[in-house]
Length: 253
View (cartoon, rainbow, N blue to C red):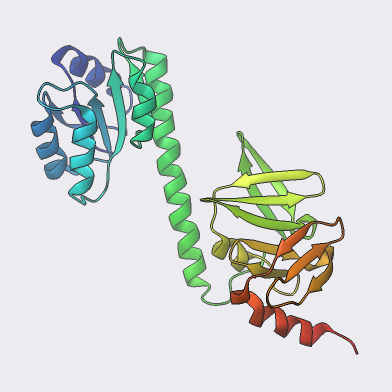
């Protein structure tokens, strides 16, 4: 992963020395101001940009904005450096993966690099998963369990124990009898993994496990799915066709 280092001369020297211990992060360019940094990113196309918030000609946030407006590929991951801890909040708001306070400490720097590695490992796993889905076409392998990562642990969830799944922004909340887990995943992808004879999409934001459904109220205006613990979930008119198909197929009398 190529690195562009943009900072004052003393900090650049320190950063290059620290990066020398990380063999997979070669330094492609060293820069002393914002304009030079923008040109270096366009030329070198680095995966990582280590950038001082307080550059001589423009601040680091302006550099980030300009780099992103160039639509360069890859878009570099950014670590910001600063002498003011108040810059940290703004750094994360601007999408930096980390913010390092000067003077730089070796152990803290290593943790920051580890965060970058984890980010790229996640992207690689995500790309592999998308490739696997593409190769299986329209009939991906249905999972009888899900493996989710949470706080450094891998948790194995039996699909049959999932009560319902709901979206929360860019995340999904998987609800069980024993509690819930929040994961970063799309509703479409998790729906493809689940057995359609057991799980029903009732809304763009919700999937239910039919094992826990007590009743489906079929009013087109105010339809709802009621679970056996009295949880009430709304029905979407857009999902009604598949729900009606299920009801016609499964109902008696």
